[in-house]
Image 1: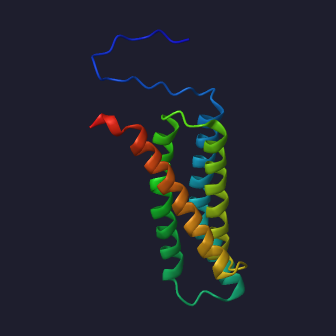
Image 2: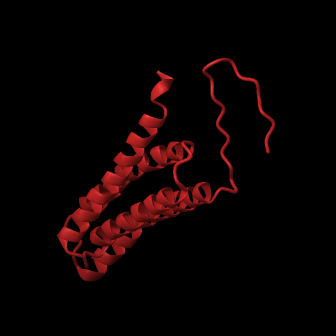
Length: 145
């Protein structure tokens, strides 16, 4: 147990426990998604060149930027979400589901083996997960204003 600090009124101290399964799960999937993001451009380019689909060189850049735009809020909101001490099982399920959805989107970008419906549904699911966590964080810290 950590020693308690005496804090001024209306001030809260947050301790992130690295032994907590939720924290470790977030860190693992955040790092995994970062590696996936870094690998997206070369994998997509190689796949498209191999299949002769490389007609528009701007597609790789747009896929990379779209993925970056979706991952950035997840990384920020996910890190703050962990500080709210949510139910562990729900948090782990959200991180795993988000990662799986983004992997499906990447497969849709990189090699196009998935139908557009699956790829679009994966985009919506990952968006909903990030919005849910953001609303949870806002509600949890609502008295901070």
